[in-house]
Image (cartoon, rainbow, N blue to C red; front, side):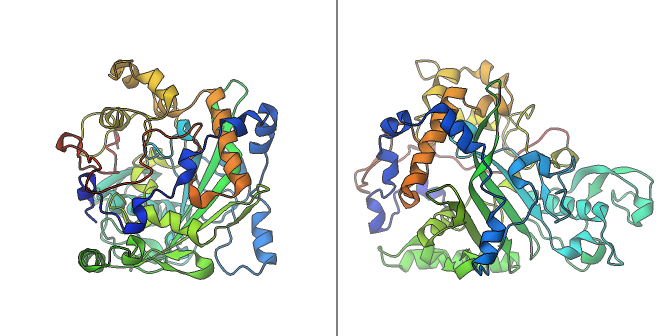
Length: 463
């Protein structure tokens, strides 16, 4: 999907000319002031995940039921390679959060796990093999990033009987994987296709409150704001994907102005499976009820997710995080922003966060994050580039303790209201840099100097 033109025009349906994300304009400061620091710290440290599966089962829920033991404990649920300790097949990976929605300084921490179907976890004889599974995951990584090779943990080619690095010799220890034409083990009959996951691929994404350590460090809170799930129910070839995008373009050119873009994109309700995004994926979400317990999202709340997983061109096979994984062996394991370099986008030579600061003139979509502006921008608006270059991703994207407390409190007020369909951003004061209404004939658009074509894939050092 090439939606770069939206940088220079407001191609909105008539209903969207009025901004319905009215939570952006609510002054939450009086509500925040009523919440005690100790109260919010206790709230975000409470586990609201462990009882979800049993509640869904008792209700007769027929959709996906999330099961990873101790998921609320974040990193503790996974081993050093990212494998879930409960043997469920979920694997956590270390990735760079997308600017700026998922930067902790703007309200949330998160993590993502991937799971390939059972056959990808077994050798040719049908026996479970973590080595085979990790190699198949690495093959999928190479495909999604369109890489010829990636690093892998030290592996014995002789034991598995495959020439992984493509040098023509089976060695006792190799650390490079040359991307093959097909997956291996019990999945050896399935071809590897650039930019596409195999059918049955699953992702689990937790969006969490900001946990606050004893020394003010920002951690993954035990309490989940949301639990998001994706499953690729149908594999579409590259030609089929292109055909669907072409059909979308043609429909955009002939549709009634009041028709929603999501409807045009082929998004369809899928009952307790959430939504079908029109490109082979089910997308389902769970969100807090007014008491803080996770519940299935309602129709409009679920449609919110389709804005990113069906209707924008930045994704790789409708997903974000895996394409941003730290490439190769070093990227397997629970997300950790400490020590992570500000890797540039593929094809660029400057760190992605620094580039974002340059292009946006701030640290969030609304240029409202005053703490980040004070840290990394001068009063003149110029960037303290040396300071930015000297920081890792954790330091660049983490808020102070006081800001973290305020962001947690702000979001909690939205939970209590159950007003998610009016917006989920944990803003601390009404937004100034957002239109309440748009007149496409008069509203200014980006000048040519501020229009860019970019990529979500990153150029990590030393793959």
